[in-house]
Length: 248
Image 1 (cartoon, one colour):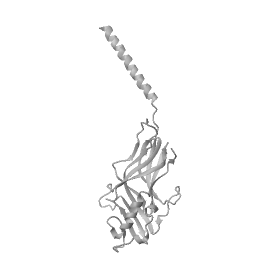
Image 2: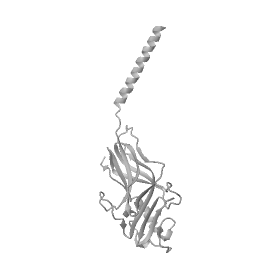
Image 3: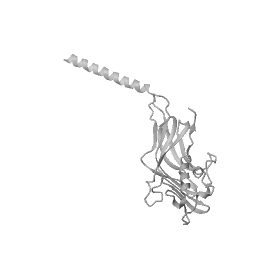
Image 4: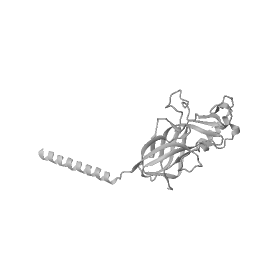
């Protein structure tokens, strides 16, 4: 009995040693995937300005912009597959299930509003997805409540306001790929000139004569056609700047 017990003990010890050695060998054989911190913020600019220059003029045509706010959620980078055997997660979630209202222009000054940050596996990313959502993180008496974008301006020196209540997914594709290999600061940029592109003055008016030009849903002030043009423009007006782009 004693011999059998000793033999069983020896076999168990050998088996345990083999398992540990096997795990250690596998761990050493599987290299750790490198990660980098990705930070994303949002701002506004003019598409015709030098991308490295600070935007100083917020005038486009007959509009002089003083304030822009935008509500977004579910922000994520999508990894471009590099091989069939890759175990890298394909999605880097920068913000989820927590709508955030961003102030991009305040009292005529351009701002850079933080959105979020996350650790991302190094690699080439193919697109950025996010959702325009109705603001929920503000009080119900805030003018932003229930809208996804609000912009204030003057139009021929008359106060004007644009407000969108759309909820939609926006996909920004990187044709050449966005390479993450080291810390990245990315900038989601709204080109205000692109939003107002191809909207002639004849489409905009203070229809009810109350001293405020309104462009919003339900044909307010009779500006329905201009409002629909803004809706059509908004996705092309949103771009991602910064980061290194490469063919791959």
